[in-house]
Length: 483
Image (cartoon, rainbow, N blue to C red):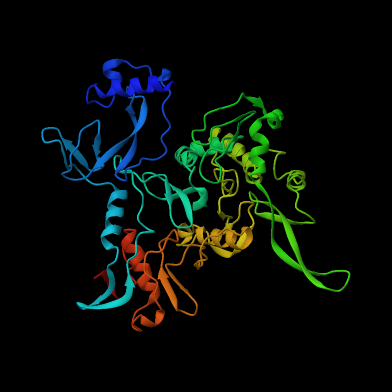
């Protein structure tokens, strides 16, 4: 689309009805419109809204107005929980504010406040303050939903837009600029239905990449193609699985999985008896988490070696899928005959085809890496009262720091591989509280300033519960509150 055409379209729209969807009045054919790409809005109070510009065909930046602020259907919208009063053209209250906005506003209101114990009406300061800048969720103020991508200091991760629960897709913050979580949202919703999940796992299917976008290389059953990572749309011809290596995205896809790292140094003695340092290189397969020593840095040698191990290239399906698909097919076959399969659905594969980090056998659940190997000793009784609380997020972060060198903050895990609410380092001189995703929610203090009658674990667990809207533990000896 030429610039002059875009200018005409924008000018044309400015004279149109205040209705957002101009198609109703002017019958614009959106298939003929090439929309300008918008990744971010310049003004902090603006949100990207679909079907707002150029005859209702293209997204645009729109102001999201708060209570009693001005509004109209074209230039601004009322945030979730508010409605535009058409006579006054201001936003007024309308129903319940969404979970995300309530959670964000509560966190903002608590930020900077002291945290006290309250026993028999006597307030005692714990030494902690709420610091919630890392916790505050990013919300879509028009729909009220959580933004699918949530970025904190060290990492970005995908969440369910309705519940805010963490889903598949995590990367370092510095690599999060092109992260949309589009695949994570779409496939998480689809596979949340048990029948859809069984159908999805029964054959070769679509994959997400580690950041929650669509993987560039996609295969479904016997057909493969290259896809747009942001939308999943096909951008190449379809080819049979046997010809998958002919696709331009084939090598690019697997090359990104492979790295040669020579950051480590090793001491050696030369022919003259002098001690010197030389590079110690590793061939790293990020998908499986495995690495091998190399004599010298050579990416092609590394790639060919990993391919020879059938970790990449030989089959689009990952190890987990190769094990699960026959079981899923058998379960589906028995289901069609009215037989409920027992014991065939314990294994779970994630949206990238690798093992879900929480895996269960007949008797216990444990935390595993992407190739199904146990991580440390995080195990619990599968049928105990606490098995549902095992998320393994901390166990996997710990594994990625020590094994893959990820630059995340090293935090303490509980027995289930989750982040402990209370974190103390350097012999108690640095203590703070974190939420269930490992985001800091308090200031950093020395344990020596906490009154001896109070429990650090109980303080942090309650701070977390208050922010995450959980009921406080009935085992608490004290009542805590912001003060």
